[in-house]
Image 1 (tube, rainbow, N blue to C red):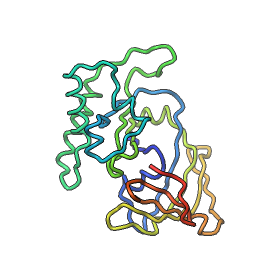
Image 2: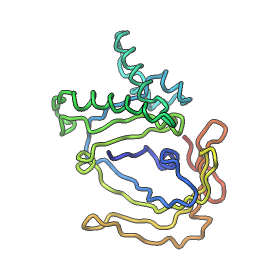
Image 3: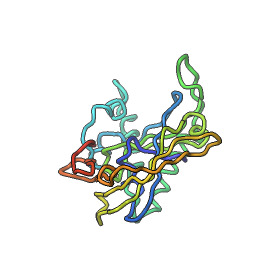
Image 4: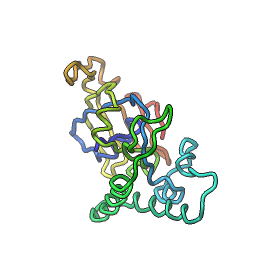
Length: 222
């Protein structure tokens, strides 16, 4: 699968980055519309994660204007199962695998509609970022769909200078930047800016996930 997050900040928390690691952080764009499953966005699942209400998620949290009680219960159970904490209990991950097999391997093709996705099959899954307590979203896309529908914007090579023991804050230093080049290569260039302009701090502060520049000034919130 091609795993990604909506925004740069969640990536470091999702992979549990450690001090001394160097990471190629990339940004990608979608080239066409695709079908995606969404799991874990039932209000009860988001509350269990500690996620704040987000207006952009209303369509995912409450997707049906009129919904039967049975369907709502099924949607809740799927969301709670898919967002179950598996850390230290990896056997629980089998439940997520079973859910994906049901949604993909045993799912019927979706009829094509005008101005809709070109494929009759779902390309992947959108779900809350558990390491950020549901404050951001992740996606998992099948390789064939990623090859067809994604294009690389840029890559930044980053060193983890510091990581807190609780995994809730990081200090980052950008080392180089890259762009897509012919033949599937990446053209890199070193950054010659002063370190203070290449450094960033990300962490959990007073109930919000905050990104700060080298001077400590906030520039992004989740």
